[in-house]
Length: 258
View (tube, rainbow, N blue to C red):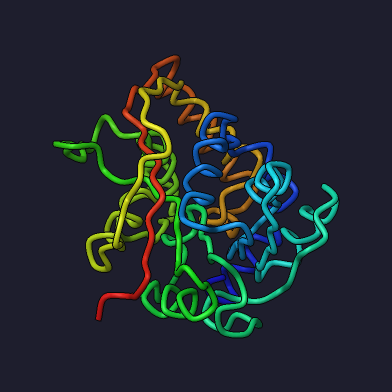
């Protein structure tokens, strides 16, 4: 998927991954299936399949899905759900012949890749209809605001950890911001909306991920330090909520921009 280090991180959080991430809702799965089949995609190679959270509903919808992931822990979770077409590998060297699948799909994985261009180029090699990615594009006219984004609770935790002497080194904003940077650098041939809705969630929801040690960015933080940081963050964010417009879209590349 990405580096060996990232794969090891996901090994560690695999047992908590599903409990701390929202599944794709049924309507979005249906729309995704419709978009894939409309583009002639019936066999899918999903890169970064993880615990099979997307592969399973796509399989249930009648698509033939083969999953690739670098993390043994994540693949183990996927197999426990009954998924059988699973291969350990990474996005840069897919162990498949040229044009051996209808399409190669990344589901919110682009932000994890050290070299998105190389990964998409490899996907175009394997996919008869190219590379596909489920992404979070920016809403029309959207401006990233420091104090009203979904990552506000993360900033609180990271600030508290830095104050305790455990700074977290992260660049490029949260996953949606990094996905959008990839889309800007490597514009897809098409971008079809899968879902577009307004979502309101408590800031404390994000804190549960840290509490359960399900964030790879804090795996090296001593347990007691992280627990105290989460308690302090809980007192700071209280019962505040954030509201945002969340758009998911299917990006498609028949070739990768040079």
